Figure: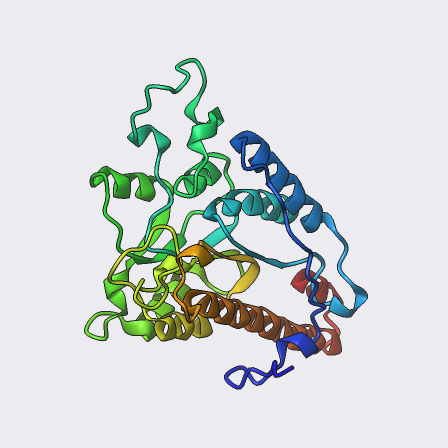
Length: 300
């Protein structure tokens, strides 16, 4: 298997990390509340598992989820927040905000006696970060990148501001604006290298001319190369969990270009997570060799 990544100088499959396929989560397609509960319990179980001895660089598992519907971000954030005992900083690549307040859309069938966040219709792939913020799972200073969606009104951005997000538009990828390097710099200066980060990548951040296999395509997106450039530039983030979502084979082209793009994105994210572990290992070894054992424990 040709797994060596030339840009990183490592083969992520043959380094310190033990990589395990944990199988599928099969949520109910008939009951939204049950599906959320099933996904939440599955991710909580994964997050509580002990890591293999060969992966001694981390005290808890780190996972990449593949989808599928973007709503999996909510149960993943529940698990990560519980495991790390703090809100998680999110780096969200997407054409859409996904922080929409469900109250924006009038629904005559809502139960007036039940809070909106407790109603099944509130949980969708466009509201899961709103729900996560309501639950205290998302840290202030989280970042969207690649945005180009239509809004119901400027109040959508105001709601996003209220939740503590920083927005980077799709047009910022142009070299007469920030460009890929400038986007990397803005992400890194906003998030830093120590906070636990959840990396959430909706494949529709890529232009539908290059990745048509998705449910909510938006023209004017990034190229696959531009997304990969940015992902490579943020390799120093402390990514503790990730997803690559909204890949829909039914809408893909005959060359399966969306699936290929999704697979490359997963490979780049995995490479960066493993490479970051190697850097942490070097810091840990240096600290131990200097005799600062207590400091070394803090690194873990």
